[in-house]
Image (cartoon, rainbow, N blue to C red; front, side, top):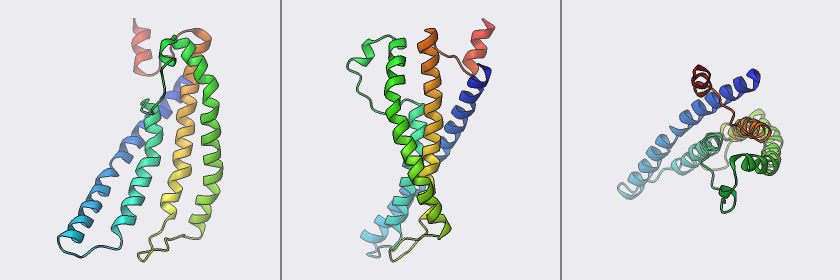
Length: 181
């Protein structure tokens, strides 16, 4: 049990830290967009790089933030009937429905890893006039998929524990506080 709680703590801390770091990508994205608007509409001198740069920054921000959103329970779900069930029943249902999550994230990781690796090997760049490298952005997809897979595993472990024992799995500072009582 100590291994599982250690794994959950490690993944939660890593995803939390990476998610917070990735959240700061929104600032350069905003700066690039504001710069482009000012240059285009006030100085009539549009850039050739701003749109593509902002798309790449936001794309990285979006995909890397997925595991963080999963950890915080920020995904939209339809809970019309689900919220009426006990936590244990919800955990059992989650264990059944999470197979779709694992299929999706597994295929995403399986397909994106060779795609991103090939892009890296050939130093792939955009066909646009500016022509920036695109392999760094492509590498964020398998990286984000792996983080999502790890974060999904922590949720599955917690749900399995709840389904079997009827009690929430207490991890981290909460576990220490519960042990002290």
